[in-house]
Length: 390
Image 1 (cartoon, rainbow, N blue to C red):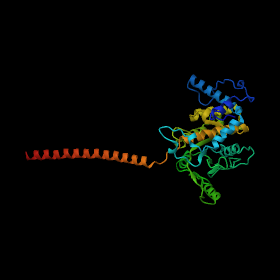
Image 2: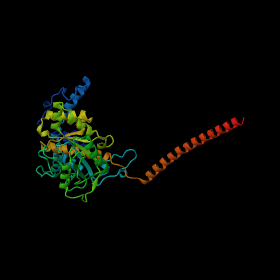
Image 3: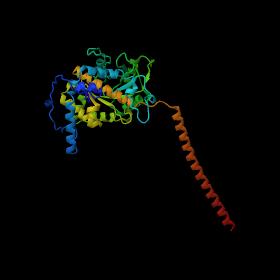
Image 4: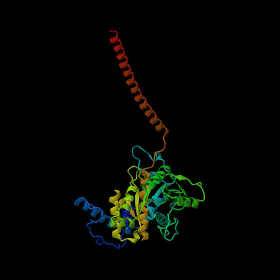
C-alpha cells in the first residue's frame, strides 16, 4: 500500500538508511512494475511531453507501493514516537525571517480537520489512525461508521478524537459530509476555519429541510457543553477512490469537479499550503487502479501525488501503519509551518502609529490642495472685482 512519499523520507538519516537497506524479502520485484505509457488518464494531454510526464508520474506512483514493505519495525516505531512527542516546537518550526519558536502562537493541542464527501471514509480513517497508535488492529471503533450511506446522513456533529487516546497534543476532527451544494460547503468550511471547531457541535446546513433540522436537534438533546473550541491547524481532505474512478470511467465529471472546487476553496489552504489528500476504499481496487487514481488526482488538484496524496486502504496492517504515520507527519509538519504569530503589543503599536502617520500625511496633502484651491479662488474673485471696477 502506498503511503504517499517514500516511507523513510521523514526519518532521521540513520533510520532512513536502515529502512532503505532492509534485507526483508520483497513480494514484488522491480519487474512487477513495467514502464507504462499511460494515456487514458482524463483529458488527452496537449502534447507528447505532457503524455511522457504523465506516464512517468504513474510509473513512479506504482513503484512507490513497494517501499513501505522495506521499512523495519524499529524505524516505524521511531516515526510514531516523533509524532506522539511533537511537543518540542523547535524540532518542527523553521526559524526564518529572523523569527524564533517563541514568536509563534503554539496551540496546546494540534488540530487536524477531516473534510470529505459523503461516504468518503472519514470515520473509518479515524478508526484506522486509532488502531495504529494503540498498536492493536482489533481495537473497537471509536468513530461511528455508516454502513449504508444511501439511507443515512452520516455524521451530523463535530467529533473530536485525541491521537493517541490518552494524549493532549494531537486531535483529529470528524465532520459532516460535504453537500452537493457548494454554497453549503463553503459557508460551513469558512466558519470552521475562521472561528474554530467544538466537540459535539451540531452541523446544520442551509439546505436542510425542516425534518432533517429537527432530527439533528432532537439527537443533540442538549446545548453546548464545556468543550473547548479549537482553531484548525491543518486540513485532511478525504476522498473515495471508487467514486473517483467511476467518475473518470463514466465521463460524468460532477463528483471530481466537486472535489476540485472544494479542495481549492481558499479557506482550506494556509497560504500556499493546500490540504493533504487521503484516498480510501482501495481494498476494493487493484494496485494499478489505485495508482491511476492518485495520478489523476495529482493533475486534477494540482498537487504532487507522491508526496501529498496518501493511499490508505487498510488491506495490510504494516502498509496501513506506514501510510497513516507518513500522512500525519506531513500534516503536523505543515501545520507548524503555518502557525500564527503571537500578538506583540509593541509591534502592533508601531503599526498603528505608522498607519496614523500615513493618514495624517495624506490629510496634510489634502489640506494643501484645499488651500491652493482657495488661493486660486480668491485671486479669481479679486480679478473679477478689478474688471468690474474698470
